[in-house]
Amino acid sequence: MTTYGLLVFEEAEELDFVGPWEVFTVSAMLRDGADRAVLVAEHPGPVRCNKGLRVLPDHTLDDHPPLDVLHVPGGRGAREAQPHNRVVTDWIGKTAEQAAWVHGVCTGTFLRHAAGPARGRRVATHWSQEDTLQARGDVTVVRDARYVVDGNLVTSQGVSAGIDSALWLVGRLHGREHARAVRRYIQYDPAPPYLADEPV
Image 1 (cartoon, one colour):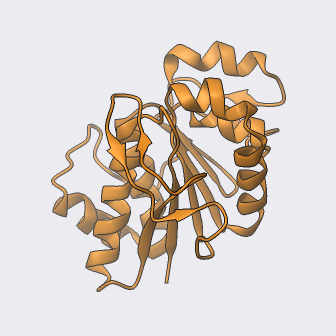
Image 2: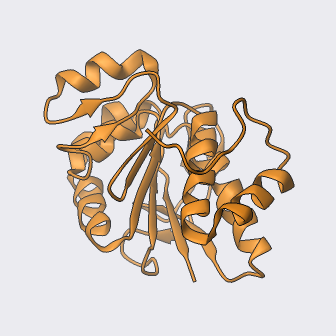
């Protein structure tokens, strides 16, 4: 069983977690419910995201199940407020040590950098923030790559690149044919198409 935990917070970019959520939950469905995905937040109440969507987390930082995959989205909150929230960064650091994979999208890399998992690693982020992230130090920003895999850390550029990297991850976890079945089910037709075997 694979448990995916997707962190949400104020001003998280919606598609940065909803796109991977779709990939992870369809993957679970095609595996006859063998896996599950949960939303995790600092507090139990509704979270207002970057474009105004409100979501209700399944768990808080203190009561979630063990996570095999930790997902961190981007958005204004990921690059401005949350890197200074020690409760969240400490949780990310601790959870990343226990998870098999740390996955994220866009400027969520700023938050993973502040928490530790992205330090000293090769990463991707949104094109408009590459210089800013590089200036933070102790990180190598790979430009013009939709997603980057460095050890157990998977980072991706903005929005739709998160779907690409999530497909790569379910392919790594459950096989390439399974990932292609997920892609077909969600009728995602990227260009280039999902290949599963060529991360940067």
